[in-house]
Amino acid sequence: MKGILWGMMALALVAGCGTASKSADDGRVAISVTEQGFEPASVTVAAGKPVTLVVTRRTTKTCATDLVMPAENINRELPFGQAVEITFTPDKAGELEYACAMGMYKGKVVVK
Image 1 (cartoon, rainbow, N blue to C red):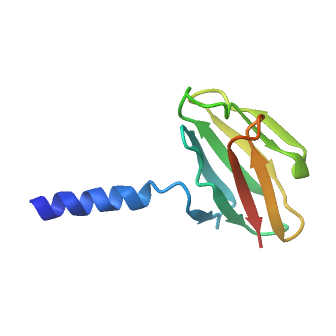
Image 2 (cartoon, rainbow, N blue to C red):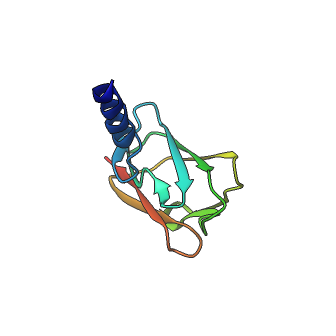
């Protein structure tokens, strides 16, 4: 029983890691805003294909109430508890950085 509990805790830690990079094979990427910032902090998408970031702010204890991505001219409000869909088509490989309006919490979209 003790081994099962440890295994479940380890799985929960791995699944909840917000610093890992996530790939968007279908063009949709779920991003949560928590007290630690944007999770995952890095996502990978394909160049030339539409991508939809589905961003949900899950805490009120954050300044990340907006998502700003200057390179794509994006500035979207993130109401608490609501999934906000942000769709754009990155045209070339590279990194697109985004942040909260104050620039304290940051993330990136890696375009390949």
